[in-house]
Length: 339
Image (cartoon, rainbow, N blue to C red; front, side):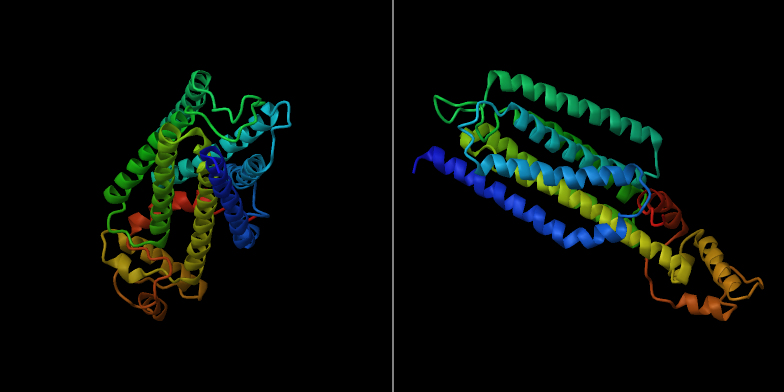
């Protein structure tokens, strides 16, 4: 078996494996999609999620078809390749769009930051596509034979440019997230903050490492191996971005339930400056619901309702009024739990 054949077969195995992974993940999470996404209002989050979810399936399926099918008898594969490339691009842009929304919410819906991120994203997309096209002209994909019809399963060295722009953008988002986490949310114990930070960092770390590996493959290994991580990277984008939204929606449900059930950890709020305002409002809400309307001191357990809430186990984990208020943009942006 020649080195060329081994290279193509290796890329095929990785591609088919990625297809199996995305189908398996879809089967695992379709119930969450039905519960948390279907039937909700169509907005920027749901549209972006739908593009991410189903463009990933489409792009991975087309890449798998190109990998396992003998396309040497075809006269041209330009249309198929363009559609496949477009589905890859849409999936990745939509996944990054969800990450931008997450960062936007994490920064309290800072509109200046949003504009800056969108401008940087547009520059990165244009740069990645334009420069890679130019590089592809001078460094075309290696042909598998003298009678090739341009249907080779592989990518040129220009793909390294695309992954380079992607790494830069991911690092920018990662720096913004880390800065905000330890500057504003330092010491926060809320599950919503933890979920938002943890999932975002896992996503960005995985994408950065996979993109770096793709750059090395594009520049170092023979052309027959260049598509080894093409489909896996697409699947990582789609799967992780979708799961971030699922986790945030789930936490938002629990956030709403905690407010309604009165299970906020009010004792923790009392230990921080300004925390008693949130505590007082919540206790007043529950006391009013129970038919109790008398006044109470900000730190005194002067009623059975307040006393019971002071010892209620944490569901959401708020530790201060600042944290509670800071999570409002996240809940409003990602929750959308009502029709």
